[in-house]
Image 1 (spheres, rainbow, N blue to C red):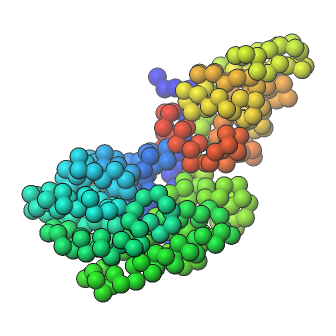
Image 2 (tube, rainbow, N blue to C red):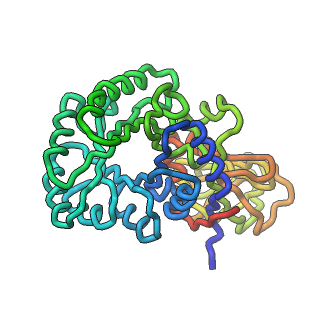
Length: 374
């Protein structure tokens, strides 16, 4: 028996978004981010689709994700972007994953374990070119390169950094980060024999930062149909637009008639000002539909928006359908996505939650049953 709550993932939209971004990338290859269960969209299904469309590599946060992808038959290079620790090295090496190294501390143990397995490990270095979060500083970068070269069974395959402001297309910070990255990596061609892939651009870097494509781009939110600067980016975009991939729907389980002055739900957070028709939905914060959406969110019923009223509880949400026509138990309610000509986007919900689309997608996708469609 399936839940009444369903997250539908559109294969067609995933393909559309990947193909559009790949075209924009020009000669740069594409690393598709499938960490965090592909932002809630299903890591294995998305990885297979991106591999079919020509992704050069995949990105995960932890080694355990990469191991799952290997078990599913994914053969593309898989970069482990975080969590490269001594205790994760056996899994990384046994699954032929690509570690992203942030400083010298892990290198001796990585080399030792590679020697034990008689394998050469290709790795990427993470440079802190202005993100201020993780990685080696520019002043220490060349020393880190030399440390890799000095140890057996290690091979430098790439260098990466990250933009902190690429979702702000007018920020001067991105140009500075690009310049810092270029300066720090300028001598690599002389120091490193063979190809060393340079990658800096995320989705914002692809869309908004001139000159950031380099050898490879790392795409996340754009693959799943959203612009990194949210509603601003969507409003400013030109065709062909990115297509949201996720749709979250449920079914009405009760329709109630209440009088004016009725308090609804916990703490009577909402009191009716008129005789009202209220629909009860079997969804709540257990499903990622958080309490902060109480009295703020809207859902689609019968192709029009209807307001959420009262406190959202663990498993139930109330919606005022007084102005909707002929609503019945069993009718569909759409919390995210389209119904008829109406649409509620993750950016809309993010605005009501005071967050970003990334968080909305992860919440809904990871806390509900998913189905891959079309």
